[in-house]
Length: 217
Picture 1 (spheres, rainbow, N blue to C red):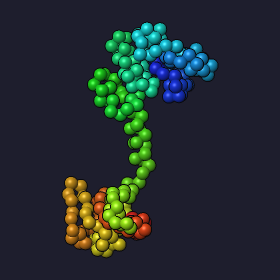
Picture 2: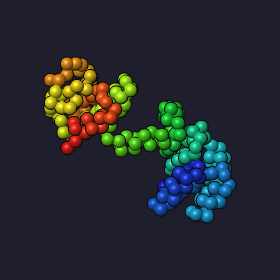
Picture 3: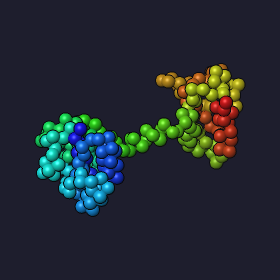
Picture 4: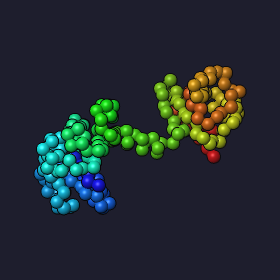
């Protein structure tokens, strides 16, 4: 497969290196002559000095025979224009672009970029995977030593199936969000279920201990 990469920064360089290792033919179009020289020093004569959002630079790279163009610059406008030139002037079958601003993803999709990868969203997705689902969220301070907090109960927890009155939270929970339903006081007879979201008022010095008694193994 012949792949053109727009942008010779870190993303473009490491992408080119990996693709070459997988026996693809690769060209990198980069504006900065120093980066061009560095890429050629590291990877061989695969770098072209020029603006990837310019049709002439893509023509020099052989865009008419490319199977895929990947835009990796820090400028969303350049990435979008590069993909459009490849797709509509050179009939490149597939285009992939980084979107540095997640708000631009819709525009990229609307204007025909085949795959748009938001660097911000990719990082957020990774963060969400690392954060436990029962993360305590502090909503607001009620008094000097009391906070309103929210916690989502995980799939398995110590107090699963117990009535609230049977847990250390009996005097703390003021609202439960269960799916689309909101359960309001009196709550003591309700049994705790996985993925319930508990809204509670707790002493700031005891909140972690309180929830560990409910969530612990």
